[in-house]
Image (cartoon, rainbow, N blue to C red; front, side, top):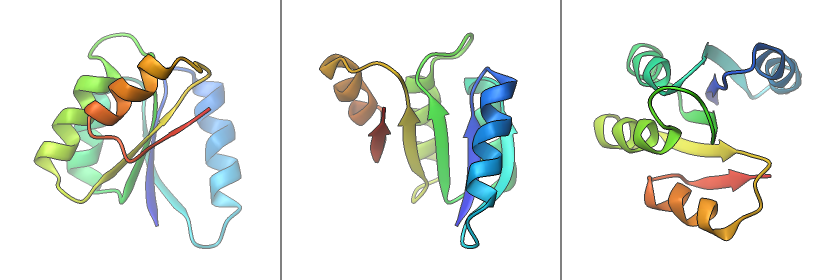
Length: 102
């Protein structure tokens, strides 16, 4: 499975990349720092799954998710967050996400 990691924290992206790449069936094809970069990278790299932080500067994660799922049907968006608020979960699903990981 080809994954794109989207988070504004470099250290988190690097750590998640190491964890994912330890799995033989996962390949991290790229990283992005914000929603705009996520859209560009998704278009260019065509990942199967986009793992995206819920709170980043610039274009919102929710809008980036909407655009990616609209422009690239079949791509899965999984939001990564520390927020347990049900409202965030509903916003993620409304934005086209396939899942939400605390």
